[in-house]
Amino acid sequence: MEFKLIVKKLNNTLTKEEELRFQEWYGESEKHRDYFTKVKENYVRSPDTIDLKKGWNRLASTNKSKRVSIAFWKYSAAAAVVLLILSTVFFTKEVSKPITDAPTTSEISPIVIGSDKATLTLDNGEQIVLGKGATYEAPHINSNGEQLIYNGQSEVENTKVAYNVLTIPRGGQFFIVLSDGTKVWLNSDSQLRYPVNFMANSPRKVSLLYGEAYFEVSPSTAHGGSHFMVATGNQEVDVLGTQFNIKAYKEDSNIATTLVEGKVLVNTGAASTNLLPGQQANLDSATNQISLKEVDIYNEISWKNGFFSFKEKPLSEILEVLSRWYDVEFVIENKDAAGVPFNGVFNKKQAIENILTIIENTNEAKFKTIGKTIVLQ
Image 1 (cartoon, one colour):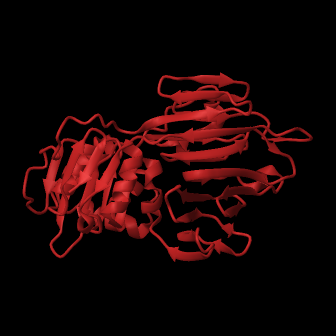
Image 2 (cartoon, helix red, strand yellow; image 1 turned 180 degrees about the vertical axis):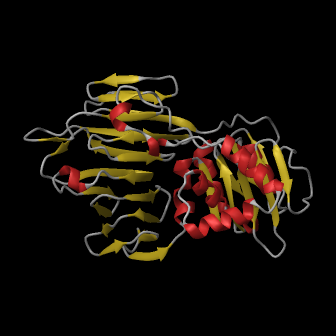
C-alpha cells in the first residue's frame, strides 16, 4: 500500500481503481486496519480548507501539519523496511539494532523541530516578526502567528503599489493569503515579494526571490482576466488559475516548476514551454535551457502537507532538506553513503534524532552530532 493512498482516502479523493486497491489492503489483516485507524486518529486538516470569508476575522489554526504516520525505507537488493507510527514500531526485516537507540552523538544536541515563523518587511522598511504567540493586525492585514491574510481591495487604480516581503528562515514555514485570494505556502529558507494590492487591468505579479513555494492561484476570471505571474531568477511563470510548486533555493543549480493542476507557461525570454499536470520544468541556471519530465506530484509537494517524501533520492539531497527544516549543518565525510538512493515518507513534526536513527538502521550510514552540526561518517 502506497502511503499517499491512505492520505487520499482520508481526503476522500481516491479514484475507483485506488478505492479497490485500498479496500483490498484494508481487508487483508487486522494489522492494516489498526494502522489505518492510528493514522486517521492523528490526521489534522491543512490550510487547504480555510474559508477566507470567515477566516478574516477569526483565523483558524489550520496550518499545522498533518500528524500522521512516519515511514522510511531504502530499496536495494535486500531492503530494510521500517514503519514508525507514533510510539509503535513495526519491522518487515530485522535490523542490526533497536529503533529506540539514539543516533551516535558526542553531546546532547540543541536541534529543534521547525515551526511556523517568518519576518514581514513592510514597504516602509519596518519589520514584524511572526510566529507562535505573536499576533499582528494592521489595516487589511491580520496574522495569528501561523498564517498571514490580506483582506481589502485586491485591485486598485491610479495608485502607487506598496510591496511587502515575507522571509521564512531556516527551521521555518509560513502560509499567506494575498489580497486577490491567492494562497501561498512557503517552505524553509524562502522569500516572497508581493504587492499589498494588485493594480487593476494589469498582471498580478509576485516574485519568489529564493526558496520554495506552493501556489494556489485565484482564477483570472475573478479578476477581469488578469493573469497571475511569478518571477523567479531568469524565469517567469504565467498563470490563469491553477496550482503549482516552484523550487529555487540559492544553492540549487536549477529552478524546478511542478504543475499540479491547470496550465502554466514557463518563460525565460529566450525560450518558453507549457506545462501539463504532473510535469516539471527544470531551468538550468548556467545554460538557461528548459527540460521537461514527468514527476510524482505527491513527492514534490508533500512538504506543504507536513511530510518529507523521497523517491530514489540520494542521501545527500535528503540531508539538504533536513538541514533547512531543522536548521542544522551536515558535514559529509562518507561520499559513498551520500550517494545511496532512498525512498520513504517522514512526518516533519518529529525530532531529527528519530530520522537519523531510522537511516542508521539501514546500515548504510552513521551519524555523529556535535551541537547543531551532524557528520555523515
